[in-house]
Amino acid sequence: MRLIASPAMAEPSLSLPSFETVLFRHWDPNVLGGLLPLLEGPQQARFLGAATGLAFDATDLGRLMAAPRPAGLPAAAPGMLRFSPEQMAGMQHQREAVMAVRVADYLTTYANEPSIRLGAAGLAAFCQSTVAEAVALGIEQEGAHCRWAYLQLMTRGRVLDAPGVREMFQDSTVDITPDDRVRILFDTIVAMETLS
Image (cartoon, rainbow, N blue to C red):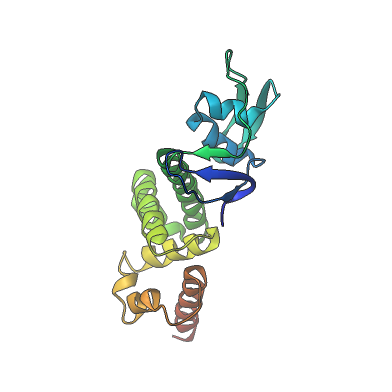
C-alpha cells in the first residue's frame, strides 16, 4: 500500500481486476483542489456522500473553492472510491505543479541572486524541470525537492555529472531513500563549501 497525499481509502484503476489500495488525504484542502475537477459523476456521488457541497481554501492554488453537489448525481456506490490511470496521472501532474511553486519559493529565499537572473518565467520552467527530474530519481519529500533544485541551480543543471552522483542514485545495494541521498549530497557539498 502506498500513500497518496494521506488517509481515505481509494483504488486506482477502474478497468483492471486487480488494483492497488492507497491512502488518500481527502481532508487536505490543497489535495481536494486538485482532485475535485478530475472526478466524474459516480465518483462525485461516492466522494460527497450525503453532503450538499464543499467549500475550502486551497492555499496552494491561491484561491477559495466551492464545489456544490451537481444536480442529478447517481446514488453513491458502496466500496472504495476508484480512480482511472488518467486521473492518477492528473493528480500526479497537479502535485508536481504545486511542488514546482514551492521549490521556486524556496529558491527565491535561499538562492535569491541566481533565481533573479533566471527571471520569473525562467525560474518557473527551471523548477518544473527539476521537480520532474527529482520525481524520476524517486525523490518525494518537499525538502528533498528543494535541496535538489538548489544543487541543480548552483551547478547550472550539472549535479548528476559530478563524479559519483549518478552512481549514488543508481546504487540499489544501500538501503537509503532518494530523499535521504539528496540530503547527504547536499550536506556534503555545503560542508565542502564551508571548508573552502
